[in-house]
Image (cartoon, rainbow, N blue to C red):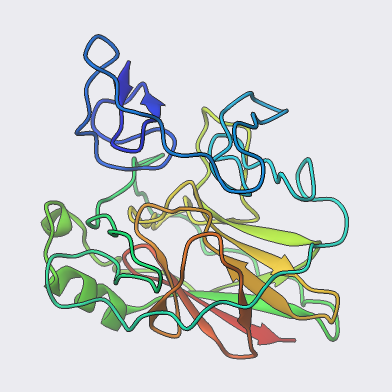
Length: 263
């Protein structure tokens, strides 16, 4: 079995099953890489659902929330505000900009596709969100895609902007809303599932999480995606919740834009 640069075991030898990173590490028969350092707070904890080592608040294998427990039933924990993030990605090789606090960001790379693209029937009109609630408006952003492709990268030439990507609206309900791509080999199904055609290959299987706040607002946190999460054009730090305002723009992957709005 292959081991990705982050230390995860993967049955796919091209892209990691767990984090979507391009496979450059040794196979199980070679010298294994050192596993990533466990998240601060409870070092060495294992996920009670699947047994995977803990690397942050959310299990990379099944999406278990170590703070709320299970799939996130109950009130959200208080989140500290984010430090001012760095500016937008540079014009060099396609990779997220460096967040405040240092650390090297990975080069952009497509995650393992879960299913081939194929046309689908127009989606049924979504139900209106509850009065006074929030909604995520999901669209494809050509300007963001062009900026990412212009930075190059080993796989940029293989990523094409979708010719058809209808707008979607997802009401934000419950204590948390996960953003990612469903895969058939894992039990986790994100509430905002970006594996539906047209599938964005730059989105990790668990890319970001929207966290409800006691005052009715929302925060967004990136648990360690392969290509980073941007809020209003600025890369956010991993595992640091960032408050969202009405109309804020959240970019994930190669072209996906989520605009959060009060209903």
